[in-house]
Image (tube, rainbow, N blue to C red; front, side, top):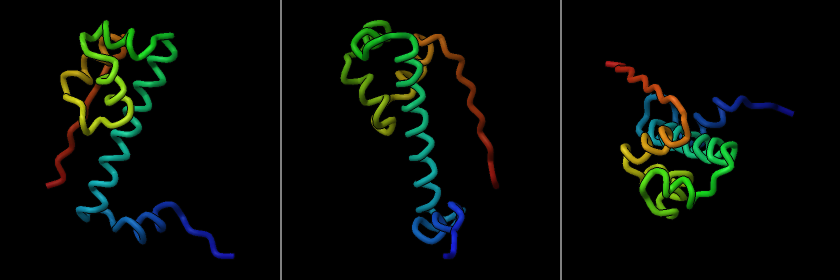
Length: 97
């Protein structure tokens, strides 16, 4: 039985690194991980979505969107959520040009 690496499967089904389709896929994956991280921290702090929303100044539905689909969330809301959770946020920007 032949085995494949995750990289090989991703190259075949999504596209090679550097292609538009692959870049979009990897960006969405990062956003999903970020949303899951927010959910995990919120639960560690024993907060409901409604309670976190009240601290941040948004509705429960907005916290749900942040946790499930960061594509719909505003950047400042995401930063407020991390601040409310007592989490430090660091961003790295790398230019490949």
